[in-house]
Length: 515
Image (tube, rainbow, N blue to C red; front, side, top):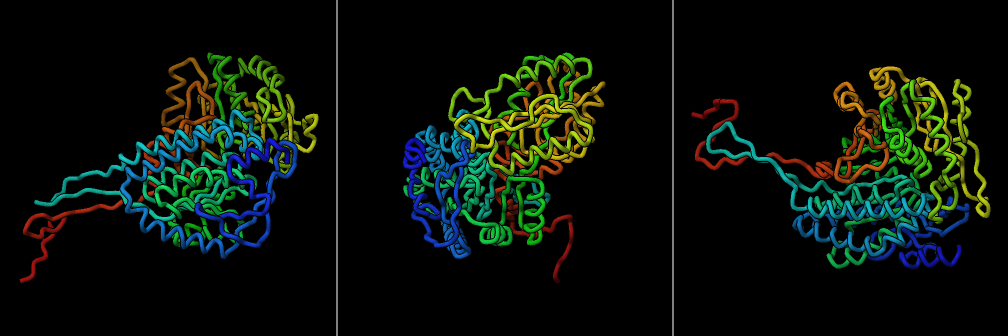
């Protein structure tokens, strides 16, 4: 580990991970002597630091701590909880540079995207502060005289947060900071590929947690599926599991948690498409496609996977797109001139290669890229050349999500056909259309249009704002996080009826008198 990396770790208070510091909550780490997890940088394949994995005993300690903390934290007024989150946002502002850099080192996304992810955390903190004074219920009119009806929302309890490597910070913030103003506590299980970023979050927010006496509200645990993951899914003390990952993972999570009638918030796979009409602004469409397909090396759940382009403009669109791809600088994500960093690991590289092989075997044609990229001085890194592949939408490989920079090109003739092709995949996360036609725009956004949770016009599929609810339909899981009224999933609804009269009339006019 070089001096610069070591300095970043020290700035974020995680230099002790080199000595095997373990995962715990805020005020002090739980010491274990279990197995160690090594965090490798996809930039060069070198080890950054070591983390001791939590065992089943550590899990029980943290769950006891979390449930105890909930009993008192839920009684803190929501605006005061909002003040705590506001100060967490300020701590993130102070550490934005260091945390964004660590994301790039451990995750491989370019530093600009790492910084953007931290800004997203700051934005959701600001959103949650306002939300702390807007946890509204409704007042209803009772059919019975001298009765009042209303609903209110109560904190739910311990929220289990299971995240993926590609957004090691933002997804935690979407869940934990909104859940906190709702009065919940959280147990955070990050991806084993990005443990240091998770530890950094805990250290950044620690002074605020101490100030508000909120130890046990934000809990972190890094451990195996057997010792931590499965206990979380099966634990009735965790009423809600929020899980981000593949569709296959989500199906397992949903089945296990559903068996105990627990709640799940699932953010799963995406197979996102952009429809390009013949009257689209090609400059805008090319730029949006490039960022959507190449940003984060195609490792976003909202990454653009398919371009459904009108046949009359296909040739010029593809030619311009290939020219744009040739200008993408692949390399060290710490270099500000780099546009695409590495994939997360060797497994991801192999997965991309297998998908391209399958596409060829099923009849597709690779129009550009697709091979490994060798970066001088970073031969141990996991670099690839983004690929453009001409396919048919029904090919089995096109129906799957490959977490890599592969962009499939699909032709269409009519708008109805384009929308039909768009919706003929199992996933339903993000979608977009580039068009100059109001008719095409409104059809895409109508009931007969996109079947995704996110539908954009003249904006790409990637880069959602925190103010809107984020999530998708079908095999994307149906969950909603972040903005709008997504806060409700972290609370329980209670309907209240108050009789302030002297009689006891029954609903529906039922008579039940005792003589």
